[in-house]
Amino acid sequence: MTIEPDAGELALLASTVRRFVEREIAPREDTLRRDGALGLPPDLRTELQAKAREAGLWCFSTPAEFGGAGLSPVQLVAVLEQAVRHTYCLPDAGDGAFGYDPPNFLLSASPEQQARYLTPGVQTGAQWFVAITEPSGGSDPARSITTRAVRSADGWRLRGRKMFISRVGEAASGVVLARTGPGRGGISAFIVERDWPGFTFRPVAVMRDHGTYEVLLDDVFVPDENLIGAQGDGFGLAKRWLAKGRLALAARSIGVAQLALEMSIDQARNRETFGATLASQQSVQWMIADSHVELHSARLVVGHAAHALEAGSDQADIGSSMSKLVATETAFRVVDRAIQIFGGMGLCRELPLEHWFRALRVNRIVEGASEVQRMVIARSLLSA
Ligand SMILES: Cc1cc2nc3c(=O)[nH]c(=O)nc-3n(C[C@H](O)[C@H](O)[C@H](O)COP(=O)(O)OP(=O)(O)OC[C@H]3O[C@@H](n4cnc5c(N)ncnc54)[C@H](O)[C@@H]3O)c2cc1C
Image 1 (cartoon, protein in one colour):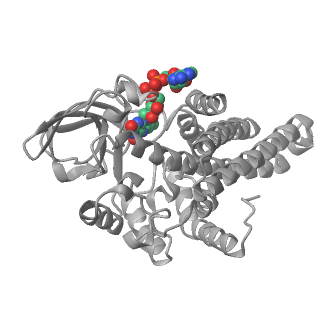
Image 2 (image 1 turned 60 degrees about the horizontal axis):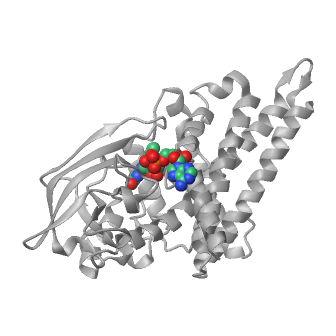
Image 3 (image 1 turned 45 degrees about the vertical axis):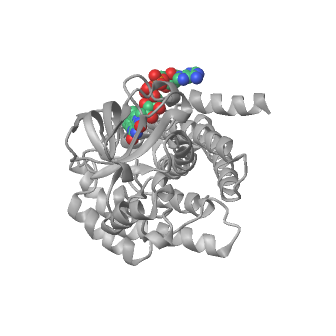
């Protein structure tokens, strides 16, 4: 079952994306996985990107004026759930076939910054990094960011280290948060290019198939015109980025877990042990029922949060946190049960389940661990 679209247009949009994935992406992945590939080969991604762009399925949440599809939050979660119905779907739906939405920091950038980075990046299918986390911690950036941006003639000098930053190896530019003063109000956001002098990075392997990077900023000069918004706006911009990112991550988690549930149902119907199908065993039926009910509940939370974000409600942040918490925890359990139903085959590289399992484990920590989401929710309730 998909998100219940309350408008024909939304249903049409979601089914268009689903058809694209089923026809263009999923069939091409079967043999790749058997050969041990960790993602789409670049030439195949480029070919799929051209088709997706032609179909108008490009950079889903980027406004049309910058070359994206301009989907609203409600449309985005409905579409993302369908866009991940294939193997290499995490962390990016279509493994980049649908382009990479620029971080929404850039929607608050100046027209000059947008003309220089945002529009060309969307046109060329550029990837982006967002560097917040440091070795001193990611859960509490207001305290743990120690990277400093020191004033110099015509700009800033950035000095510090960032940790676990996705896509640095693939992206030409991104957003770096650095300290320009004390406290939350002392964090600023800068657009930084990866090949500027003083910017170095090294891969840090993690349990998912997509790696991350450690970044060293050794006196990197950033011109004045690359500060996003005003000095000290960084924390607020990051909060907006996270609110949208958590919702999208929740929708992707639900979509892939839904596919795992459908695979479990097929397997339970067809696999026999002790002279009967797995589907006839109550313990398997309960796993399937629990997965269905939990996914359905998570989907409702995400849909509700998307409406709150779209309406500009003051409940949008808490809705995103609830979505991220319930969807990532649920999706992980659903894929875990799917592996159990498949037995040894569930652990094989040939099937996508173990790949999703590792990626979904990561989703319970990135963009705020589950405990941090609980903290956000509890604080909001206790301070009301
Ligand atoms: C694969 C991957 C990709 C990533 N990509 C990026 C990226 O692109 N950009 C970026 O900036 N960062 C990125 N990160 C960093 C990620 O956001 C952080 O790892 C995450 O926010 C947790 O921070 P931490 O690892 O420093 O853990 P810590 O902040 O040290 O927290 C450790 C654990 O403590 C617990 N905890 C923390 N605070 C509380 C609390 N208040 N109450 C109860 N328990 C608590 C949680 O269980 C948490 O997992 C990535 C990380 C990974 C693994």
